[in-house]
Image (spheres, rainbow over the protein chains, first blue to last red):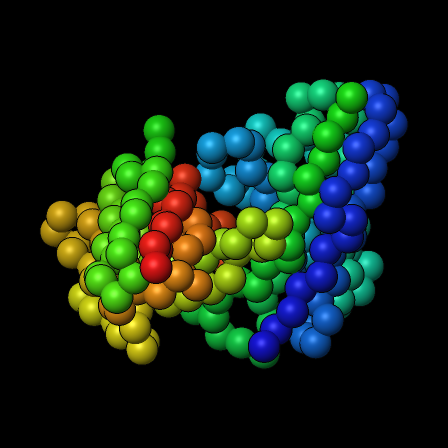
Length: 118
Length: 114
């Protein structure tokens, strides 16, 4: 089945530093990838849609300068949390859909990244 | 305002019995519903889906029922197995919505006891 690899799985960083999270589709191509965030005991919330070769689309309330997204190839999207603060501590998870699959095909998720900012 | 609600944060079931996970939604513009299963330290994996034009979809031990008039869907697992123990997320998609813009519930943690 389709596999999405996300790295790192866990990261602890100091306040003010930047953290990059990678999301790769291992056995399929994805023109679009999606970044979600989940706070404890809350649901997954879509942050942004990452489009290969063009700018990402951010959901309302998500700061594009804070969460930089780059989707340079059909198999890789990166999310960089810039100048991280403790309130950015969360579980970040990416997902993708195979380009050859239909609109109703399900998303495939990575295993997520637990970010802790101290 | 939560558009997809899973009101039971947890459910405990005996092995071999039926597990019923419930999900309510408020937006009548949702046209597609999915259930995802999530183990600790892993991403959600797709389980089963249903289009709004149907009221039932079955795949092996898993059946999803949709009651549009009540804006309610449920996932039935029968017979339940210990390996089914996980967090189950209900998700919905707007008609014409972006591909990834699934609205998720908060999840229900299912524990199947041997």
